Length: 178
Image (cartoon, rainbow, N blue to C red):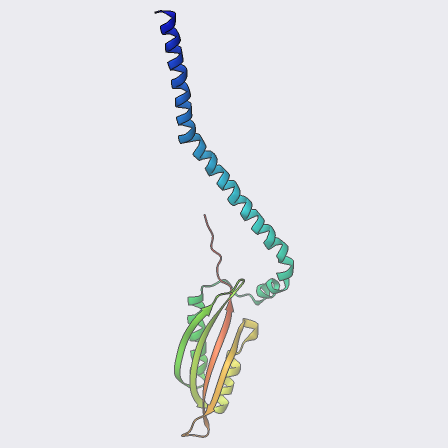
C-alpha cells in the first residue's frame, strides 16, 4: 500500500469518525440535554410557585386555622351536595313539612374552598318552618341559608310557603400528581 492510499484511508477514517459523532450528538445527546433543561425549568417554576404560596401563608393563616378548627374533612362537591340535600330533607320530614321542590344548584369553585348549594321549597305551619330554618342554618359547620323567601299560603293563613337556598363551604381534595 502506497503512502497516498494510506493517507486517503486515514482521511476517510477521520471523516467517518466525525460524521458518526455528529449523528450521535444530534440524535442521542442533544435531545437528552433539551429534556434535562426543560425539567430544570419546570422544577424552577414549581419552586417559585411554592415560595409564593409560602410567602402568602401568613396572610391566609387565620382562614386556614378556622378551616382546621371546623373539622370538616375534604370531600368532592357531588358528595357534599347530596349529603346537604339529604340533611335538609331529613330536617324537613322531622318537622312534618311538605317538600314541594328540591334542586341541586351548580357548585361554585373558589381558590381555597368551594361552595355547594341546594334549593328547597317547603310548605308547612309557621312555627315548623321557622324551626326548620334554625336547624339548617349551622354556621359552625359552614352551612348557611343565603336566600330565603317566605309567603303566606293563600288557602290557609296558618301555613306558609318557604323557598330557601342553602350553601355549604367545603374543602376539595387536592390532586396528587405522581
